[in-house]
Length: 311
Image (cartoon, rainbow, N blue to C red; front, top):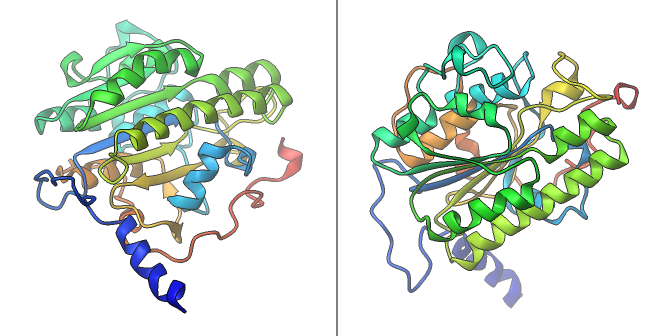
């Protein structure tokens, strides 16, 4: 009986804005945090996630996630990421190509980077592919670092920044699963090995946030740009369109989000969490991730999001 009475109080303590002994920082009006970390795991299919992937499964158990999240119809890396950071579809943000083409210029629509910069907060990008530089409308919107196609090498640049960063936006891109999917095929042993490697990198990021004592002050969003099938992606098949989407940390109440989530909602959720007004965009804040949700532990891993024949 004592433990039954104590448990609700313990759960409330997990979600208070600042832990005892730590002085809270002043936040923007309506903000739940002033520090957001987004990790995009390129080419990650939600149905590959298993309980032995400790980082991703921790997000499932401790964070908020929908039963279904989707990317844009043109499910290629650069257009999809442009939608993720702008809250617009390809017609709205204008990035309809999928390669590094400096002559085409950078995104012209407002992005989370430009809005965070305008709000006076720092922003940083650590990516595995040079073409993601097109996501910066202006070079001073965020610091940019190409860390290579292997996430463990990329973290050599990103983790020192994360250890010091207390405010603003950090965007991290792991390229490993997409590279393995194109080389070996989605859901192949090689692809699953690459997902496990990305999961270990995710664990390292979460460990840094934990060790810095900032888990209650940092909103972590982990998602992807697209899925894949055979050795390709970019179609309207569910295996290409379905993506994972997790929110964890500051302001997040664990559980399942009843509505579906779209990749354009990532930008809107980021700005809402930071208390930054957003320009016109298709995406809507996933406020359900920042408030009270249903019970955690509902089925996600192994859900029939796709048909086996589509693999």
